[in-house]
Image (cartoon, rainbow, N blue to C red):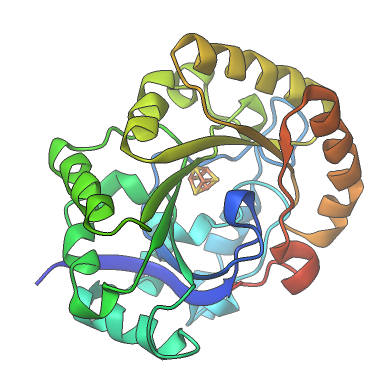
Length: 282
Ligand code: SF4
């Protein structure tokens, strides 16, 4: 039976993007190809918050005990190998049982599944069909992959997604592509991949979502959108305020909303910050 290494599995309100406000099961897989140490830092500097936490790793017995960070990747424990023991490798049956326990009616109704990370398209494309074909997953209608937009879809997985959506008229696959701008600390050439995002657009609905802190980030987003458009991408663009903690989020959410209005792009909130303080499991 297939196994997936799961950093978190929880039920919450989707706080970002197209499904903002929709009750959703979040399956956070382990592993990422980036580190995004630049978030929340002055341009060119990298966060060392994660290093300080890793040095105290023995103090933490559970994912939920880990400190939140205000700089760098806010889901660092879902990919940094030093935290890997906090993410169990679970059989598909066990994952589905857990999902049934956390759904309010013990079955899929109008809830949506978010497969996130880490980078969910990095290592688990082969296992997802086993998960989605489980008899108790048949009522699921909408899935979002929250991806950084750099991973190719395998031929088999692309084919499977086509079959999954064709099986019922009301099924939908969405790729929420959070392409990483220079404020993440990741190099442009590794992070901006129009050909990948066009591939997602061919396999479902895809949109771009950029994390913005400053006017400089907005300029980078404009340049990236030009590249994505030149590569053939036609989907919508969202911008979202930086801020895994409320203090940082409050500093720039309105400014980012005003930028979105100016550009004619969509504003994405991060509702999990004001609603739940971005605690683990939200
Ligand atoms: S791509 Fe996402 S999960 Fe990976 S390091 Fe960057 S912010 Fe974190």
